[in-house]
Length: 299
Length: 289
Image (cartoon, rainbow over all chains, first blue to last red; front, side):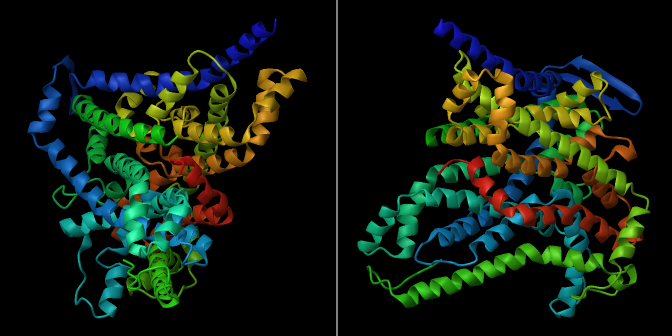
């Protein structure tokens, strides 16, 4: 009698899972399957003419690799990610260590945390538009630099490869270092304080404690932060798209993978777009698997 | 980095003091670096086009309302953009929090055959971004006749693994199953138990995730830009992109700044009111330390 009741309750587990499962199947799984399917077909528009879909096997993959698009844009994306991630992780580690260091007893912590997390919630497209106007040839930054006598004439931020990449990396770093700091702090607070006390009694300096205790014990979280940041970095779109108006200029040096995908989707060039998406799916799947492993081992 | 010369437990006050000063200096620099842009944005949004052309000034002027007024009556459908963004973001936030709580409850409260599998599966797909399947997504909504509609921007929020994960963690720490048992003994149906007993207990988690979902949807640019085509249906990020692609030098720069401010400052204001729960929410959503 009692057992049958338990069974009848548990069928509700399935019922409550229906909305998630249906929406996932329709809006995520089917699109993924058709994206992969599309990658094997020639399918694009040439003027008003629709070409395809014709089955072409792996030709789309060969095209995006041999015409240099995929390698170039992948390299651009990774360069900008590295330029953003290295300062981000260094700042986050230092700030996290200071915030969690009991001997420092920093005040106004809530204020500082609120401020550093703030940029994370800003609309990336609006933030990028803001930087575009601030760093324009006649914009406030040039105006300030000229008034201060640092430069004689406006520096053309938008016309130099490294200043454009630098601005994109800087904006992303600014938007994400607060988030990273808070995640790392949670990890640092999870470390047993007895370890720090023991190290202090043994005469370790703050630097030694940081490098010999904090860092090794933070390794799983550091891997998590790095891999999730890499997944996010591969999706880099809003900031460079708005900053360069979708061109990735100068000479496509700031064109990212998703900007390239966006171009194909906008032009309904589904064959090459599909091949590019599959490349992204595979890379993301591998990275996701690493995150999953790390998350699971922590639980 | 920090370096203290004295070894041993007598790490003296001077060294701690020096490190503290260094920490404050760096924190103040970082704070300036975070806020400077928004300060300039605010100043420039209050200045007229001719004032802006003359160069930078650190003092606000008096043209804020005029700039906002010009922007609202300008060529861009800003007000409809605001309303569209709001409708989509509120609906997405409502769907993602409600149904993620429901999904989490299914796995938290019931013991069925695929429970473990479903949990693992959702964790595995948590990191997969929408961009990489956008191609199939666009084809699908084209076939469904949902192109240029809000539905494909709202309904997919029902399946949001990250929100699910947060809800599940929250339930693990705060929702005892004995409570569910008690409701059953009182004769409440399962659906009613979920809506009237579990949901009220989840309020703090629902609030935090509603904010995150709202902000995510509010800021979202990639998919909406590919789905929405009619001018009056476009959301704010798409209008920002249009502002960028227009020949911007012809613009009244006061209006440009007013529009950027218009997209950024409401979120900042809401954030300042709710910052405590938001900053706390970030930690729980990530890896548990």
